[in-house]
Structure formats: C-alpha cells, structure tokens
Length: 254
Length: 246
Figure (cartoon, rainbow over the protein chains, first blue to last red):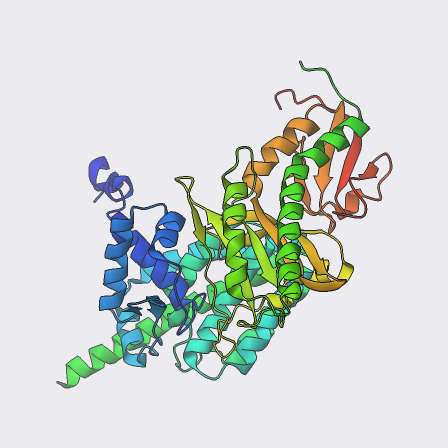
C-alpha cells in the first residue's frame, strides 16, 4: 500500500531537532574523539570557542558542562586554569556491538552511500589538486596506522587519513563532512570481528589510494576510495546480520 | 564597463593588495628586534613576558580598517627566550572586533604538542631568509577556513630569532584580488608558488585548482609578481575576457 503524499514527505520536511548547545557538544566531541585535541591538551578559552562556533558564551558554557558531565574534559580553576581534555577510555567492544545493532540496515547503507559520495569525490579532487606536501602527510598517516598499538590509535590514524584526503582536495566542506562521518562510523569500522581487515590490510588499501592520487589518476583514486568505504560498510551490515542471528539462536535456546 | 588596465598596472595593484599586510609584519618584526636589542643591552635574554609588550601592536593591526588578516603574531625560534623553549605571541580577531590570544600546547611530552618547527610557514622564511606565503590550504584547527599564511623572518645581529606572521582567510582577500583581475582585457589567474590558483577571472579555473599544466602551454604568459618575496605569478591566457552568460 502506498502511503499518502503527506507521510511520505514528512521525514524529509522535518527540520533537524538539534539545538545550538547539542550541535556544539557534537562538534567538540568530534574533534576530541578524532584526536585533534588530545589527552591533557587545553581547549581554547570559552571566548575563543564561542567565537569559533559562532554561539553565545552561555551556550558554549552549557556545552562544556555536558562534556564535563560525560567525563570528556575537566575544568581546572586558577591562573593556569581552563578546560583540559581527559584521557579517552577505549570504548568496550560490547558497547560498539550494541551500537551497531541499534542501527538499521537502511541507516548503515545510507551512511555508506554518503561516505562513498564524500570519500570518492575527495579522492578524485585530491588527485587533481594535491601537492607533494599532501602526499607526505597521507603517507605519514598510513605509517601511524601501521604502528598504532590500540583500537583507539588505529581508528584515529584511519580517520585522519580520510580527513587528510579531503584536505588535499582543497575543500573545506568535504573536510567537514568527512570529519562528521568519521565521528559517526569510524569507531565501528575498527570492531575486532572475524573477516574485518587488520591495520596492515587497511594500510595496503590506503596506499593504493595514495598511489592513484600521486599519479594524478582521478578516476582510479575515486573508484578505489569508493570501494574502500563501501566494503567497510558492507562488513558492518554483515556483522549486524550475524549478531541478529546469534540473538535469534539464543532466544530459541531460552 | 570600467576601463581596462594592462598587465604591469594589474601586477602593481595585486602587490599593493598585500602590501598592507607586509608593512604590518615589517613593523611587528622591527618591534621584536627592538625588544631583543633592549634585552641585549641589559645583558639578559628576552622572556615571554617581554613579548607580551607586542600584544597592543598586534591587536591594533588586526583591528585597523581594511585589514585582510584574521590572526597575527610572532613565533619564536627555540632557545631564544629565557623562560620558554617554544613560544608564540599570537592574537585572533573575533566577530565583535575584539581580539583573543591564541594558546597552544608546547608541552613536548604531550602527543598533541604543537611543533611549529616542522611547519613550512616557519621553516621556509628561516631557511631562505625571505618572506613566504604558505597556502592556500584547509586549516583543520582554524574554524573551517581556507587560508594563506604570510610570514617574515626576524633577525637580530644576523641570527634568526623567529617569524612575524599573519593568517589571511582567502574569502576576504580574494575579493580584492579578483576586482583587479577583472580589469584585465583577457582571462587571467593568480597562482601561488606551488602553482595553485588563488584567484581567477574565469569560471574555467577555481580557487584551489592546480594550474601547473597551464604554465607551459602556448599563448599563456606568466609574470612573476615579486620574485624574491612570494613566488606568486599572474598567468594571462590568450582568450579575451567576455563573461557573458554561459
């Protein structure tokens, strides 16, 4: 049965419910989570952050309060006071699996579609616009992934690689979108499940993308980047199916 | 339609668009040399507290009318200050026309330690002894902006002591540059030393594109803007500038 026109468009017409504070919280978590501000580092002052986000100082204070409550930052008083980034605990594997189960297959596929659009275009443009310095940075983040010693480090090096491709593409918007996507699915990609690639295998794929970028082969770079992010999402959809099947089996046994 | 100008006039005007920034950096650099010289006569090394005296000048420059910079300051060569191994005195311009000092993490044990010693805007003027313009590039830390970083080396008694620099958001300075390019009778683009388009008067080239392949083609003429300073070039294409609706 076809839904009436009204219900069909409703979800696209709905405005994003997120308020200013939530948006600032989300962006701050993004930069801390991706390691742009690392453990122990002092965040810029309240005034500076309020300026960067273009929000009132009150809004920013609310956002910092949320981060403090979640244990992401601590605030020290006094002359050398300010907000400092706390050590990010590595998310427990089970939490990630639960998060994956909460997503629908459609949401995952849609995230994959968006990531394919962003990562593919970024790689294409990077092949046309990047310079030697960008190539060196990309190689640097492949090396950091290879030598990473924890899931958190692997995930950050991987995310940073993709963000740097967008930086090499000279696009502020693609960079922004890539950061947001990495904050959303980056952690899930590094779940340690059967059939998931290890750091070395991912480095090989990253290397192939960089080679195409260095050679100025925009089409190849784009195709490789698209395939790379599509495979990652497919693995997540597959893992979700396995988890659901396991749940079914357990329910039957009970 | 406004009267068109020829290439030498255009180059002069493009250079003058940057001259204000250059003059500010020279003034800043002169002030730093003066501080070093005063400390030298007192037979002591300058400290980060001495650098704080620069703040009013930096702020005044950022707040002056017609400036293209949204951040400016001085970054010091390690070993020059008595109290800090690495240090900068840098301010950023806020929406409400106020300025804010930039704080960075110089704790070398921290994994996010801000190591400017590997950044081209610091190393290039240090190694060449000349001004340099880095970019345009996407600044991950700079509130989602596409920027140019203009830096000048500072010397005291022939010794490199640091740089004076300014961040120029491209969306601001681009207006000034394009207005001049539009007065040329033909299609033209302004490219950086690495061959990246900074501004163009034609839709065929966009800011951020690499135009290196253009430099060798027939009919395209390249003019160095200021060979010993920037490495920027004005490339004039054979096509007449029409800009009629596509």
